[in-house]
Length: 382
Image 1 (tube, rainbow, N blue to C red):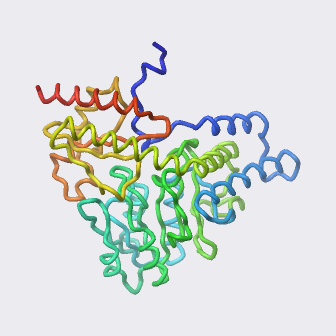
Image 2: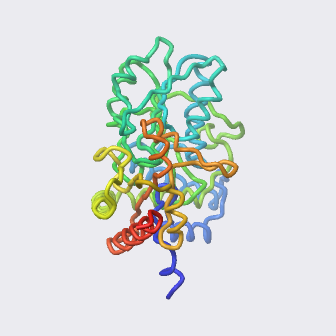
Image 3: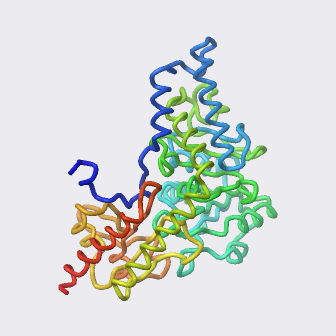
């Protein structure tokens, strides 16, 4: 048996994805032949600059933006921080609205602003992990200057009513930032239809390289830099560009645009099979997240009477997936996302996130079902 065939089935694509073959080729070509500094005024620099600008156009095309609205960053954390702190520096004080289930790169940035002339409202979510736009309206104050809400949740895949929130923000003249790290490349994202001013893009969530991302900044939206140096990326992200990784992000964006319909339908088909088979074999299994308004590749499931970490430990040679709980100094804590949805500690601890990718097959899913059922029954002693 080959090493590849003996590896566990990879079902953790919300954590990261493997590089697409076309992305590997694009990056390899760049690494071999394009070492120039994009800021240099000679043929080597001009070639590198063209690589960066070509990628900028491909990223913009993926989200229906224009190229000069794309700023390259080191990833999602930097993009989220730039959006939040860059906007806060304009206003100096005021009120921000977010949700109780944001990614730590948003949540911890907001916590840093608390007590520094800023007040933060963290909106609750319903049992599906979705906020109520009418509730958001009620919390808008005269000094609310920023709304930051994720497009889809990394644990449950539940998708927020971003277009509706965008309409509200636009009508009130409030800057609207959307962390779309989990959505871009998996589902169609159109910044014009969503009415967002700022949107975070993460390369390694859709078959591009790690250490590279982007922030969409709608024309006319004013933000300040967090880093200071030369005038790269309109002065908002100084430092010599990571040319070949940016080329990889560009290629990943191009491939995603071409494959979008097939990705959505293919992932939804496999995820539905996965869920249906597991429900049939394990009575009482619980889906965490919205049954329909959810990323097509994501299943967050609570398994009755066991802990998710124990299930995954017993399956480590069969599948690679994640739990929603965190482990700090050897102590497990339940997922804050699932707790915000009103899910009990018991069900939160029993949760497992299964996130599929473009390389998964129906044969793999059926094999994974058999392995999960076998391990579950062993843990339950039946």
